[in-house]
Length: 165
Image 1 (cartoon, rainbow, N blue to C red):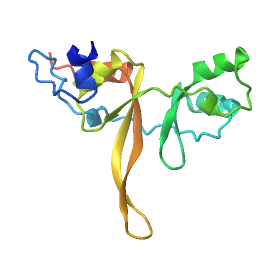
Image 2 (image 1 turned 180 degrees about the vertical axis):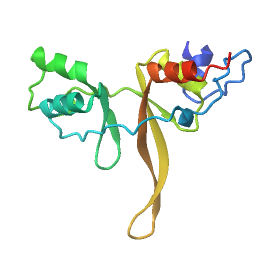
Image 3 (image 1 turned 30 degrees about the vertical axis):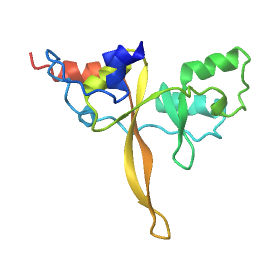
Image 4 (image 1 turned 90 degrees about the vertical axis):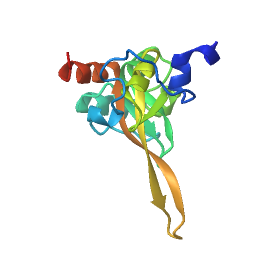
């Protein structure tokens, strides 16, 4: 059951990870990964254009974000190519037809331990940051901004470069 699974509870913010015998990097914050700013695609980008952009820029994946800032999902080069070649979508279709809309988010202040728990089940996590914005009337609201995309390879690279052993 999810409710007795500590990793699920930690991943979903219901339990603070206070267990002992964790690796040296477990409590380091995600912001220390020094991630590069992600390539963001808007939902109206066609599958063909998404393939071209990802190949040209050397990315395997990119978040799809509405102009409002709402994160719609993640598009991957391999899934887009496979879907087009299988005839499930046309090159002219918007990338929203091939996005993964189930994804995990993690904040800059979260620990690498929490990230590690997420990456045990997911291929990536979208790193988000809450930012206060003001409109023309002076009303404030919180907006979630995509700060990066992190994979197990990013975590492994950080750990191996900074190994304290």
